[in-house]
Image 1 (spheres, one colour):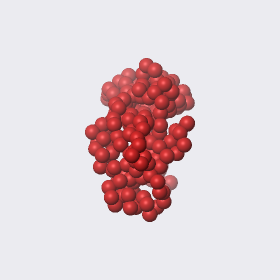
Image 2 (tube, one colour; image 1 turned 135 degrees about the vertical axis):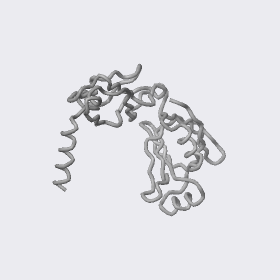
Image 3 (tube, one colour; image 1 turned 45 degrees about the horizontal axis):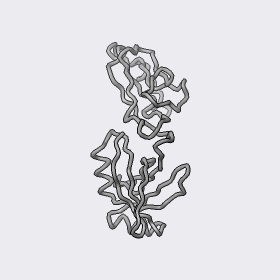
Image 4 (tube, rainbow, N blue to C red; image 1 turned 90 degrees about the vertical axis):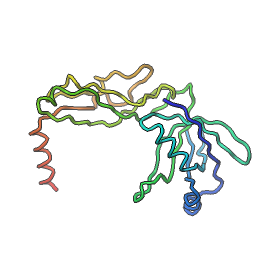
Length: 201
């Protein structure tokens, strides 16, 4: 996980019209909250946020927020919990920051990254990823960028479950141990499922 500085301002007024005005000026409304943090409305500069997200794409980002309020400022550590996008332009229109403390575990979703070529795929099977993210619990500086899953030993009909995975040091999975993550199915089975779905529609 990488730490990145980012400056935001406390937002005194809320509402749809205020949000529209902010977006016209190159800002977006945001909010900071957490287990021991009362929701705090913020204003964030859109272009700066987009640059950070683009520069560190594929990485988990810990934001070292400088929260400015009437000439005063304070530091808060946070991760992005959710980004809202415009349904047509796909532009970011709102950001949710979740305040964290470096000595307290947090629960976050981490993307799954499949590595290796399954021997079942070499036999003509199809790899299906059933979980694209896995929820983990760990200290903020232990949040992994991804959970790598080696599928090279998987044969047709094999499935890897959460319980079969080894989390990184200091990380715990917060998922049902029996939940399937990846599987190898026969090509004929996949084709039959697709045909059945089309018939149902």
